[in-house]
Image 1 (cartoon, rainbow, N blue to C red):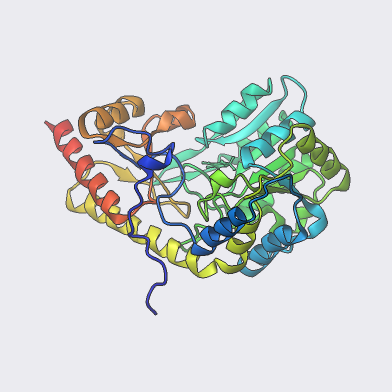
Image 2 (cartoon, protein in one colour):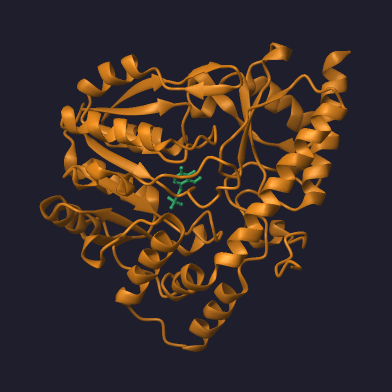
Length: 387
Ligand SMILES: Cc1ncc(COP(=O)(O)O)c(C=O)c1O
């Protein structure tokens, strides 16, 4: 069947105040985790229709909004989400902030597996909390969990933030791993926040498992966060949900969301998301196919040009983690030179924690023209480094 959507179409995001494309004219950016594609047409249609309303006052979140999440998670992941357990929140980072503020006291430890999405470090620091890191063990081109270290650190922590799937290494956790996280949190009475924003990029064999899929999902300190932000590239609409089964915890967090003024949607945050989750399955299928092709293209270049950079095999997400250790430069130096000399902007690995210093992160959610240009420039940079 012919594809319905065209991901090759080039959108000049420099003109759109895009944070990712706020770069010089000669530079290309594969950094910030959003995508360069034309959005799912129903989203645009819905936005135009909302603009036509011409009256943009305060709005409530209708049941249809939460029903759309339930529909998507049931259909794609066989997870049952109940209406009463949802809380609207403007973004995932705002949700994490609200939760940390409500369940911790100054100085409490927050555990994360690192390297991890850099903004989580700010959430911990800005709330006067202490970072507790369990570093992934790197070997055989993949990252594994040091469970002994993890458990020891969990015992002394108040909260564990799980990035599921994991940015920047693209890891999808197995059912066994998810079970183990939850049962250990239960054992030590630790709050578990599971950020599942990258879940829909599942183009490989390993599939996403939600924390709500497991037997222990009734654990009263379990908090799941969902968002259409990455899947449908609508981070700019500020629309996401917090899902909590326990009534007391949910009430605490719902009040926190209102108190922090992140619980009321902007006028455009609701309808497009309903359209996306109820009508967008084919779009997301083709999107995943496109990302997969981009990865194949990139890997082929690396092999053909005998690159000394090593791509880490990701299970999902549109992010690729690349090992630069062959060149003996820190990630900061490597990415600085790559930008200065060849105009390529990627994310330096050390922003995701110390253990990221031999890596950079590249975002595959762009058209093939940009991927090819990236490969050409990167290979020229490698030629230069070899001299
Ligand atoms: C793992 C993860 N969580 C959260 C976010 C940000 O989400 P939001 O814009 O909803 O705060 C990102 C963005 O890159 C991310 O990678």
